[in-house]
Length: 269
Image (tube, rainbow, N blue to C red):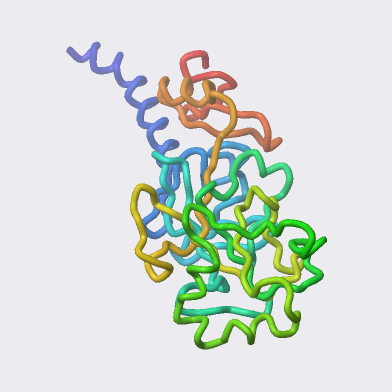
């Protein structure tokens, strides 16, 4: 009996060490779980998502080249995040002065995440010289509804009665509209400075739910993420009790197995 106990002891210790390491990688910020491919700890998660999330006073922040956003939710089942920009206009408030972040990512990050196809960006008070309107009025404007959401509906929000549609667009004369709704894929970058816009709003659709109007829209930026490829390495790592991470070079994936790291899985170690 005692021989069996002592024979099993090393396996128990290794298992405990491995579990402790897993818990160090899987963490929380406020009420949001941080799990693969994301991480707060250096070396954990997928290398394409490194230096992306930060926990500040129990508030999870998402940092990219266009700025920092508060993370409202991470949906691992649908591989998406919901972000909030404090300077983004909503149905109740129009924020002008080009204060908003918009949404732009570094080129190397672009394959890993972008706003979802049903996310509409409504650009407000853009200059007639904006790249959006080059060739206006001869060329077709990029403005259009996205998933049933667009500026014509957005004009019905209470916020517009406070600023007035003409008040936003009067400096640009009779040309471009005060609001132009676009899909992210149509212009690839939402940069208020480069687009010469005073502000923006962003909303997304949670199909198959039908919204009654702009006051019922979900305001925020819904981002779809992808780890790229079939990710067999991570599945094999986790199947053998390991945790997916990456090396000091920030590129090579590693399988963390308690007190050792493997370039394949914990069984091979």
